[in-house]
Image 1 (cartoon, rainbow, N blue to C red):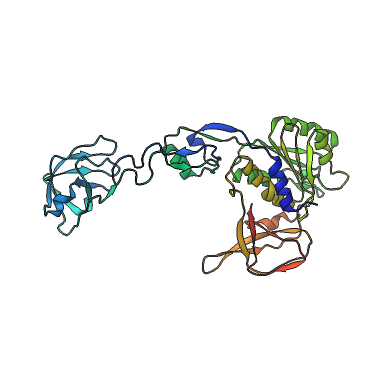
Image 2: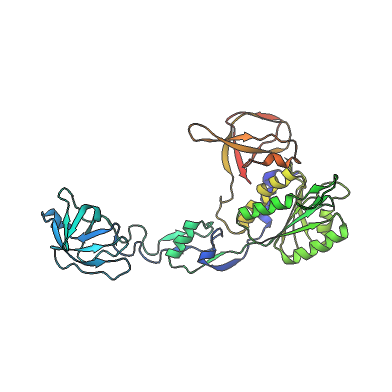
Length: 401
C-alpha cells in the first residue's frame, strides 16, 4: 500500500490546475490570486497630513514665533493650498495633502485658537516632517504588492483596491459534488428505525469545504445499488469538477463505488493507503479530468481523509503559493502509544501553557465510527508507523479540520 506521502504526491501530480476567472475586487476574499499586483502610484501619493492640526513652516516656530494667522482650511480630497508667508498657518485635516510651502503639522491638541489666530504651546518642539506621512514612504510606484498564488484575505482585497484594481484574475472555484452512499442513512429530522443511521458525513464534508472557502458545493445521497450508482455518478461527472464520495469503498459485497466509477470511465490512481484511520481511501481521474475522491464511510475516517488529502489538493489546484496548504508543526502534550505499523492520525485538542505555547492533546475515541469524539477537537496529528511510544514534546504535523 501507498504511504500518505506517496498518496499526496500522486494526487498532486494528477490534479490539473483550475482555470482563471475575472471577478470584481469586492467579491474575491478567500480566492487565490492568479496575477501580480503592483503599486499604481507612490503610497502615499503625496505628502500627507497625519494628524488634525495646523500646517506651517517649522523654521518659523524654531525662530521663536508662537502665533500664526490662520489662512484657510486644507481638507482631505481638496487641491493643495499655498502658504502665504511664515507668519501664517493653514488648518489641515488628517489625510489631506500637505499645503505647498508647509513642512510640518502641529496637532490640534497643542494649539489654542482665538479670533483666527493659532497660538502654539510654548514648550512644544517642532521639527521638519513632524506629523507628515511623506510621499512614497510606504511603497513606490511599480512596487510588487501581492504575488500570484496569494490567498486573498480581507487586507489583501483592500491592498488590491488601493492599487486601482477594479477586477482581479483569480482561480475559478471548483464545483464539488458531495455524495454519501448507503441504504442505512437517514436525513437529520426524519423518522429513524433502530437499524438505521443518521446521514452526517455529507454535512461534515460540506461544512469543511465551505469553511475553507469553497462555495460551489452540491449534495446527493445514493443507495447501495450498482445501476443507480452508475447512472447518477455519470450525471455528476458531466456537471462537476470534483466528486467527493463517502462510503462504499472497502472490500464488502456492497462496496460498489470503485466498480461504478470504473464503469463511468474514471481511472483509478490508487486504492488504499497504509494509514489508520482511512485505509480504504480511493482516488481517480475522470475522462475529462474530473477529480474523484472516494473516502471511507466511517465518520472519523471521512473527516481525516478530507483534511489530509482533499482540501490541500483543491487549494493547490487553485494555484496557491507553495506552502499555503502545509500543516503546522506542534508538540505532543503527553506521550502517545501508537501500536499500528501504519501511519497514525490522532485527533487532538489544543492546550496552552503559561508561556503561551500550544500543545497537542490526544482526544480519546472509540474507533473510526466514534464521530461524537471529534467534538472540541481542532484537527489531528500525524504519527509515524509504529509500534512506538511518542513522548511528550515529540514534534509532528497538525492538520486542522
